[in-house]
Figure 1 (tube, helix red, strand yellow):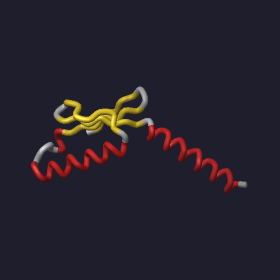
Figure 2: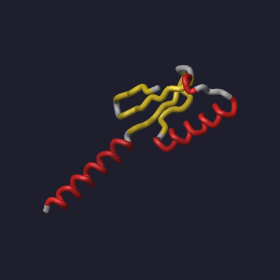
Figure 3: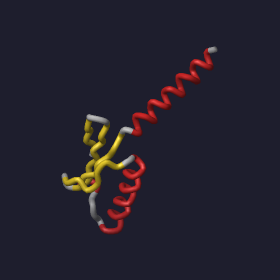
Length: 80
């Protein structure tokens, strides 16, 4: 019985995490100006990878110039 309850709890928790992640969107700012908006997690990581390659090839944009806004439903968190 206990293992069934634990399994059900794990499945519900995993579904909640997936739901929460599905509601997250990302904005990328460079020098305070939005250059990408409302990205999915996959799009965000792909663009950040592209920006890092560009930095190592050209020296711009510098990581210090970039900021990420994480949008969660009605809340916004700013992360550098």
